[in-house]
Length: 574
Image (cartoon, rainbow, N blue to C red; front, side, top):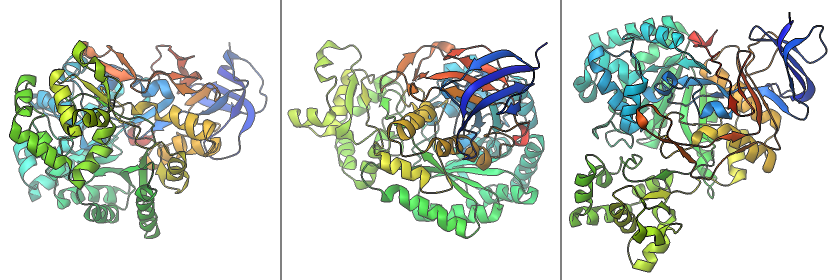
């Protein structure tokens, strides 16, 4: 009988703690690292030759929306393909507990617009066997998982459960309702939640509900949020994840108040770098430093993926915060096309497109209109001449405004015409500074499981190592693995994850840095692998020799093994 389950032989160990890399062996037994470095007596059932390869902790993905997908895809692909061994569920206040049985359908509809998850996929892939938070966690624990996960309270679900949908969207909670929300949240924390999350984007939310109205937490009152923060303060445990963009100065002031009230870490979403202007990311980093100087535990979740958007107006939702676009982006396609042909609307959208705020929304979500590239024209031969050209170029040729070109091509393609946006930040100096310039910034924001038809953030781990470590040499391997594993694990409340140490859980990646990369074109590969016959875009990984979760191989040379050793980590433990 073998003394060990796996022997990883002769690799370059980068343990996630910033200790300098060293050559050594890793011996795994019963899901944990039994020995790290040095020779040991005995032999293993399986040996992985890691000569010339990096052996490092599995990656920890803090910002995902795999709440639905994990029910039919235990490995949370495509994050699982790219070395992610632990994920956080329940981000932005969205999720599926607590939910009364009669609200299940409406709960799924809630995720169809703001996170762009197809309703038919959720209907086919989710098997509801819970109502309360403890029941939900028990169900999640029973479900096969190829990754570890922790769960935040999806605050929107709690508010609807206590107040009802109409009240939750239209008024603050009463004292009795606040007390009930505290009680249920406390009960959920007892059962294993790791904190709570909210999206607070105001009445013109760019990520609204399926019917165009704001999401429940978008207009949530300060006091209702602080009500939940006090639960964490009383318990002295838990994390808050917040996405908030209404009034920058007021938003930051509220988040400071939130951290003061909770006296717990706050994960601020999102810090992004600009290709040209370094002040964009430096302002946010300086704010975090000021908060830290006051004793407020702020962390910045940073957008680090070189991925633009590939989208059509058929399902695009990232301009929903612009009133003119919101007026035509809901309803059957034929009705939407009719509204887009209305001269009054066209005049309005042209006018709004010239406004500073709207130009910034375009730039941040999809790309400035004139830079968008026509990618696909729904197999319309008369439109093929536009493929590969920029909207700006076409607008100059046809003497139109860029937004008119987009509208006309979209209508001609029955709203299926696809456009590809530029990479938000291609400046390696700015992107590296975004991470190494502060002790409190974390790479990522994959949004895994959401926006799956037009956003490709799930490969951020591979891209980070390929781009900033190997190709640009602006981040050391030691720093990269600390930021991709140990720091996010600490910030989000994972216990005993994110580093390699003897006695710790064996979540590892083994890869060839020289071969590491993201497969496919910038637009990704379209695969029809979702329940309900739906499709998504993906980018596969190359260069990973092995991905190991709790001591079991989940992927070997890029191929799935079928193993599901992942765990629900209640309170971040287990």
